[in-house]
Structure formats: C-alpha cells, structure tokens
Image (tube, rainbow, N blue to C red; front, side, top):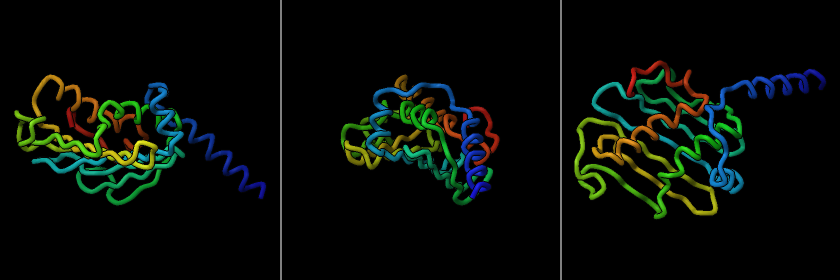
Length: 174
C-alpha cells in the first residue's frame, strides 16, 4: 500500500513537469472545463506527408492521441495534461467554435471562395458541454487574410498539448 501511494505521488510529480505551453485560463475555457467539455481535434490527408491523427482532450486531464499516417506513432496512445494545458488548448480553439451546430469551411462553400489545392483539413468537435455538440470542418487551403490567422491558430493548437513525441519532428509549416 505504501509503495502504491509513493508511485502515485511520483506520477503526479512527473505530470506537473510537463510544459504547459504558456497561456492562462480564461473564463471561457474554465466554463468549458466546468461543464465537462471534451474537445476532439483531427487532421485529414493532404497531397504529401501531412500528419494524419486525432487527439481528444478532456477537462479531467486525460487525453488520447490516435496516429494514423505520417506520425511518429500509429494507433492510440493515452496521455495526461495539466489544467493549464487543457485551458490553453481550449482557449486557442474557442474563437473557432461555431454558434451553429456545424460549420464547414471548404472549397465550394461561400466561406472559402478562393483556395489552394492539396492541403489538409482540420475537424474540431466540442462535446459534452452545456452548449451542446459543435463541429468545425476547416480546409487549411482557404485563401484570405482571416483564413491565414485561422490556419496559423489551428496548425499550432496541438503544440499546446504534450503530444510532440507522438507526432514526431515536422518540417516548418506542417
């Protein structure tokens, strides 16, 4: 029993050493955490070596990474994250959470009149919160000033989570 308690304490101490990616909790992310909101972030294929994976984070500090293609690991890997990491990730994505149930920004839609080809897309699903399930599908090849800011925020959001070892080294811009 003493050994189990010591091991649990050591695990908590190690978890506290995980970088938190900067950022502070906002009222929005604290409300999401309090409401038990789960966030699933998934990438899709491109014409090239874009990483294809999904990552699901929960406000209780648990997460699951599922590598599919062009990642350092394939298959499911569980991880833990700090409240600060959850909040930073939720905050980064909060501006893109649609008010409507689903928002699709993709070639052929009025929200993406001009676009580059062969790019990846990102799907973000917020679920379990008081606001109901919300889904964003964002093609990363949409061209425009607002789209550039969106692409940057969505591409860098996973950097706020302790999943770098699962993704592996990526060339700049991927």
